[in-house]
Image (cartoon, rainbow, N blue to C red; front, side, top):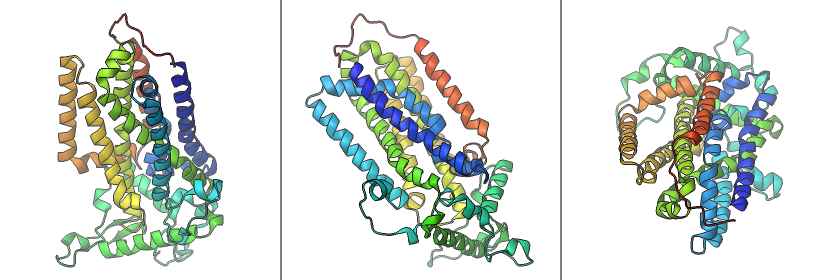
Length: 414
């Protein structure tokens, strides 16, 4: 399987470089503007991938290698299907990344394909603005912080700083999210008149005033981003690397599902490798469960800053859907990939999966509040490093766990 190993190592090496490159760019460019507070708010993009995401990538190396070899040698028209699937997933990743970012840097900057100009309508992530632009931002109206006037919008970095400070001192931000989309057929909720802290203003106001401030916050971010000179290099790199991250997530979804579907054939041709494949899939699937958690933490933090005015299809619609897909995928892996495992282990795996799904359904907001505190805007640097180290140690020690013995050897030499 030397050919399969080299191919997977090359692809996974490129993916790992995109994971590490994003956080490296953020640290380098925003070292004077509090890079970690931005990374914590956007933890699903900057903290998950270079830590727990790398653990998942390493864990899926052996399953991916077996998957490539299986299709190359033991599946009807497997080579054609493998190539077609690789190209399809690659193209789909570029397309999805373009939708998520509102632009397609790969097409515009690398392949020189002109796209319709939509930058004037894009509400960027805060780190997509040049650090000097953020440093010079004095709120709205300009200079309101140093005068006796009340700000209609506080400086962006100051709002992020206070958001992080509040996230570290309490569990969750649910109470600060205001309903800005009122139903004309129903009465206004009594909570709309309550004075609650609003992060774009950094003071207590009613729901209408906070919604207005969130709309202004989003609109003025968009106005800043309309000038290309105010774009950050981190934003450019993220747009280029986003297709690779989408490719990674689509690939492990596909590999995990197809390995479960081909389980009997895997046992026949790769019996000696199956303990390592099982360990890799289980550890990788468990690691990927953290992405929906960090993703939901980001969505809650974004709701307190942007409200419903971000103009982001990801924040408004796709983010929650992606969390659901990966949570459901991990449960499917637990239920179906280990269906031939020892009965006791199978029973425990299914029980734990069922318990986890019940907890998620009953205490969804409770879980997300803790996600914000420990894996979102309130997280500490040591949290993700510790999780990554634990994941790697579990993966390393898994190679010394009891494994099945067999006199058979893999029947392929690609």
